[in-house]
Amino acid sequence: MAEILQILREDGSCEEQLAPKLSSEDYLNLYRLMILVRAVDTKAMSLQRQGRIGSFTPCLGEEASYVGSGYALSPNDWVLPHYRGYAVAFTRRMSLNTFFSQLYGTAHDLSKGRQQPMSLGDKSINYVSIEAPVGAQCPIAVGVSLAAKLRGDRIACVAYLGDGSSSSNDFHTAMNFAGVFQTPTIIFCSNNQYAISLPFTKQTASEDIASKAEAYGVVGVRVDGNDVLAVYRATKEALERAYKGEGPTLIESVTYRMGPHSTADDPAKYRDSKEVEEWKRRDPIARFRTYLKRRGLLDDNYEQVLTQEIERQISDAVQYAETSPKPELATIFEEVYLELPWHLKEQMTGLVEESGMKKSESSD
Ligand SMILES: Cc1ncc(C[n+]2csc(CCOP(=O)(O)OP(=O)(O)O)c2C)c(N)n1
Image (cartoon, rainbow, N blue to C red; front, top):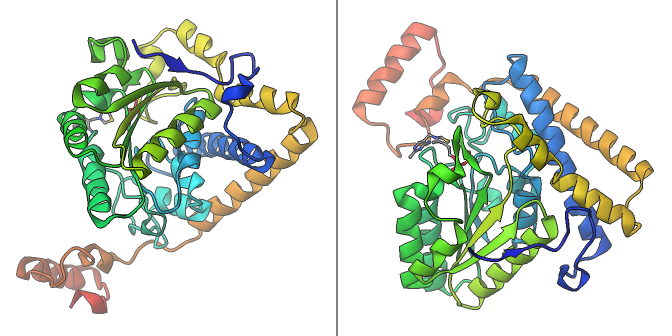
């Protein structure tokens, strides 16, 4: 089994010589992002239960995994994300308005309500829309990386996936291609121990995921996914290798999905509450909080102000999404074909007649 990198111990103490050289502001930013993601999770779960949004896939428990890795990236890098890893979009400054507009599918949603909730994509931050078949983002990330390498751009491309997705054909195809062509790719696997109801031990006969890298000629790294500093460091090192032309890295970030897979399942049906309690003791936010308090960077007063500010921002964004108009019906005919084919023109005419819909100028 590959060795695991841990910098913050479970009790919040720190292996200081391994800690990334970040400013106090960066440390607090990492913490703010983790708190933000947890608050967004809580809000979105509640909105779904009230019937105000369709579905949601919470990041609960995996905040360090996604925030730590996303924070290490540069704006010019590309992200092929995972539906659960929306935290990465926040590290790239996606606004809460953009995020909630997508959940609500409003006219301000960048995909105009055409995608299911959590299928975020934002071209302006090099954050590609979610792939529905799990693992399909991996070969795309390798393709983007290969293009960057051929063009001589000093950037990397990261594909995010879960442990279950590492059983997909696409994961193995991507690993092989990345190894052969030594592309500047990071395949980042947030191993949260479950693929919906299927536990990790039934997913693979390997003891871990990181050691699979060796067979493909790829560097494999295993990191404590509830330790934001270790995840940040491992990702930064993988990026440096990619930028220097030293090829791809597979990062296995060992963590736990504390909540359900999505708003559609009840995890109590397929896992023991003792296991959940055990992992709650390793909560990534509590661990980082203890560390920051010990270093004197955080106190209860600051935490309270931060939490209130985040609650206000979320509430404003929800209100923005709930008062935004729905996308115009005509937009369903747009942005796929340069010129609308005859059968869609026919459907559009039918819809215009039936609904009194205004024909959009760009659909002609
Ligand atoms: C190719 C394919 N098979 C099955 C599914 C249905 N499906 C959606 S999410 C999911 C679980 C994926 O688990 P994992 O990769 O571990 O990510 P996690 O949800 O745990 O973050 C499955 C099986 C799918 N979307 N695509």
